Image 1 (cartoon, helix red, strand yellow):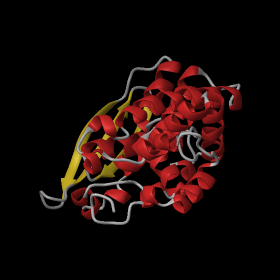
Image 2 (spheres, one colour):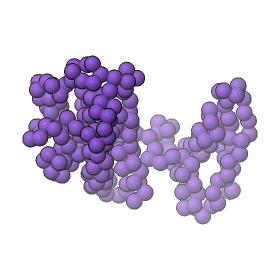
Image 3 (spheres, one colour):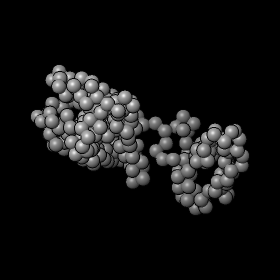
Image 4 (tube, helix red, strand yellow):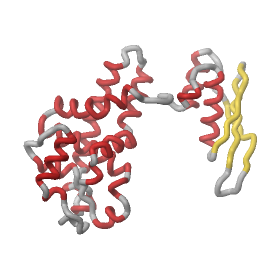
Length: 241
């Protein structure tokens, strides 16, 4: 039994076989896989958890993804490549991969973490995905680990939707490219109760019409105002927002 009182998947050879099949790699050293699936709360010692593997896996993932986007988007400049990479290595994307592989179902958690919904937490799932990458890397080498990343990240890379940068940054870069001054933002209205306000922000642009945007925070409203300009100027499509 695991520390939480639940059956420990590490005691089941069949469970490990099924997990390896989903991962697409049969481990010569299954202890690496066990470590990659062990949260600190299950062992009380960070050195025996997945933390060190997560550190390594983060770097293997970033290097692999950098190569993938470099090859897949030959016309992209450095800024776009960086934004594509950041979208693919962020915690939420790694957590999606972990969910697809069912890693949350087999992670070893302490009782408190298990009872608080740790198996569904993106922070834990994202770390586990990176730890598994490191475990594959240590077990079979970089090429095999990179192949694992390519299997589980390529579709996400090729079907990425939405802008690859935030609206305020995109607008400022576009204006600078046209020799125009940076935009300025000002609050024009606020409504709703203090605990749930709605802000309306105007963006002013020298030489161009401005726009307004609303949001539950000033930052959100600013982003929406910048988005309105980008859509109006044909830089973004409504479907991309």
